[in-house]
Length: 304
Image (tube, rainbow, N blue to C red; front, side, top):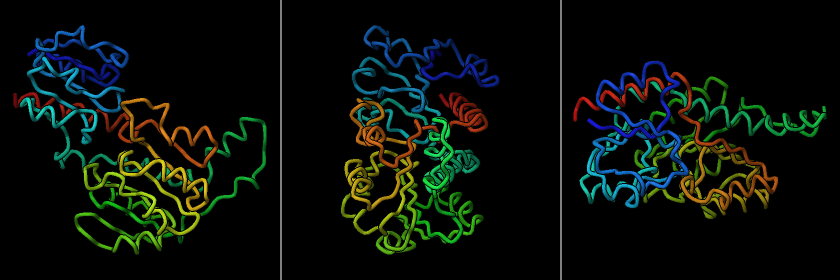
């Protein structure tokens, strides 16, 4: 078996050596600025990847001469052109439905709670001010979490974990799931101080948080997004921050992560000085989580 490994794994304990037991490995974790036209893709049986590690999409331009299997150590698949893979019968193996594994991976839910705490308590701006030599606590007044109402949109494994954390801090939790119901969406929007997004990205959820939906929120509310960037209309988010409808937006994702990030409305909003926190899609990036996810992924090669 010939394997093209596009994700860095040598820093993880025993992962690379285990991958080598399945075949010959070409280790190319730094191909973000590489021209794939020079790669003889048809000689590979497997591409091993991870969305956190690449700024390109595995699409027709890259996969045109590939006839093997794509293995990704992730639940999300927006770094792969799935429709093109289907049209070519390119098999894609992911962690999407590996519930025994992903139900034991709290990393993204922990980040969601951390982002919420950070935006509500103005932690990044406070720290930035201290780095400038200031010690002005009055200008960084925030809010406590206890007694606040959080609306969870999406109630799968991460939504359920987030509910547990929020309950532990004395928050009231409202829930809306696009597929399972629970509370009415308008009620969740109307009553929540904070909205946290935990839905999958698909045609139904794309831009589900838009100008119309944002208009139903409480004034000075917050949104946390550890789902996918395309769940929100980013231009509408920025406008709501400008006009004061939203008090803050904390996100681990932007819509065009694999394109021209310099034109991202969210990143432009950061430069503008709007109350935005952005992390570079690090939801799953913990030592413990990555070790489990990569080992579990490689085990799938036994099915080939």
